[in-house]
Length: 331
Length: 291
Image (cartoon, rainbow over all chains, first blue to last red):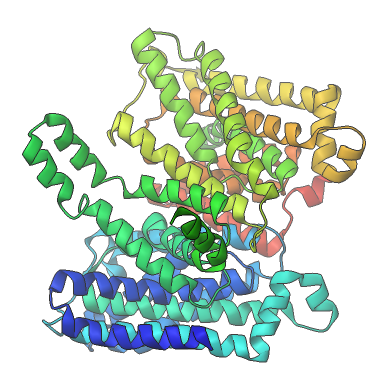
């Protein structure tokens, strides 16, 4: 299979990458990309293959992160236990929610997941005696070098893609897709749709929660606004999915790369290029523009949602033929 | 007892405005079959229109209704015409593409507002913003009472429009069955565009009426979008009577929550209601009222 070979080559490349690129800044960016590959892949399994669009990735991400952080904060055990437990706790949070929302049709699940993220954020803010509220949770990072984090993130990302491939090759994957395509038809041939939607949700929650726990270990600091953020986590997860390609195995991986790069370009104002330019020209307008661009990534995301949905409804990977045809015509 | 009555009054008055927000949302839900996740953001835009007209033209906030409502009607029409209608023809895996699109539109609106007005809080202070009058020992905020009356009038007008006019009947027909309506000669696409405009206009009125007693910053849209969908779920998707009941219920619940549990829980109340409705009354008040 051609796609297999490409994936394997990409994996080998990613293993070798930090040995070539030694700059901590780029290693940090790559760790973020790999985290988003994990989250996006989990989201895609639920939304792209099972057809249940979740606006609540932040709920599971935050729960995973807080699990790791609070284990270390309250019990004094290593935050790495969170990596094992974060996903499990996220599943436990997702379970009652899915049990309420899945038997209902229509917009209930999408809205419910949006509400779940908000409930979690409010809870983490209000329950100060347990979560430290807005002060956040601070832990000491274990490693000074970025390499261990990089390889753990890579293992997680590769593992999540592998999970999706295994699921799709099995009976489970066919059940998921049948639910997406036609729920009534799936039910009429005896598929327990609620049960399989729950399994899909659990996988999504587990992968996202584990990514959250790794984030806590890596960054060393979380607060409710960072890990339960609607725009920076939940919407970002959706963007990673739709930019790369909903319902494709490798789409989220491509999407994660593009989205993190885009976010960074805006955050650093074109990697400092704009700043250099404004210094060279010396105009007040350019300085103002630079300042604004560094805050504009949400605007760019919004425009990106609009453009991608209209032009590439199946994402870069899903609409690859369309994209490559465009390139051919241009050259 | 006095505290209870006071809370009740505050809840009902606020509920009137919430009903207006929910009414727009439920109209869009009924006709398009989607949840408009840019609803609160449209309200935010209307509030900035009001703010600008008040500050630079010196108009009375209630006069500005005649500017902000048409302006947002236009915005709704443009959004539907150029972003949502084209999606109906695009083939894709996810039926939720339109909902995602409204999220994108909401983000763009918020950020553009931030670009123009910065993140600072602003407010519109009029002579009657803080004025109150007493009725049997219970105080009524003048601005909120006026807003409530306007909201009732607008809701009544909307009902008359939906029940008695040709256009209103067409809207209800498309909501019931778009295909059948098209076969009867209703231009479903135009009705969708019009409904989005109406929904945006209604929420604009709510934002405009709320501004004299509230504050304003670009991120205010998000919380109101959440309130709007809680109201819609509570009332039953697509039910107009339900939206009014849902709005008043949410207003009451928030007022009582803030008084008897604590101010910081005010935002949580709506979300708890949301989950309770899904558990105990899936389908909302629509199941009880049948309309």
